[in-house]
Length: 113
Image (cartoon, rainbow, N blue to C red; front, top):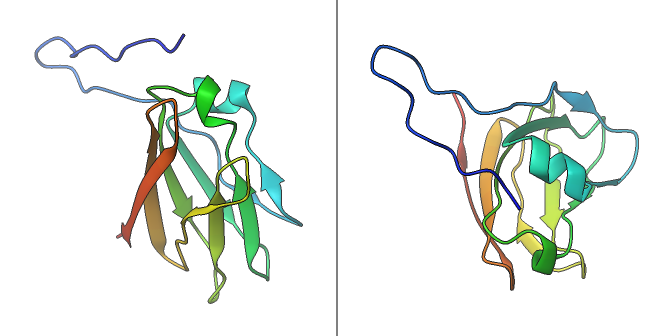
């Protein structure tokens, strides 16, 4: 069960856990443990379009992730569910927010600054 994020006390910045950026050499599968631990992840597709597969929706109810594409060229990061269906496709300098209701993953993409 995911820990609920509480409001930080006055005068203190709220924080969420972020994973250090990773350069991919092939397609990548995010594990349930990673989804449980991090709310923000960043990937450089490493010179080609890559797939990033999320864990099964049934095990991720209430999960949300901010996924950043840190590519140095026009490389697409295709974020898919465990069955291979595309959820979002952030390109170079874009990020995606994905969330899960326990039945399916949802997402949106936008430019990052």
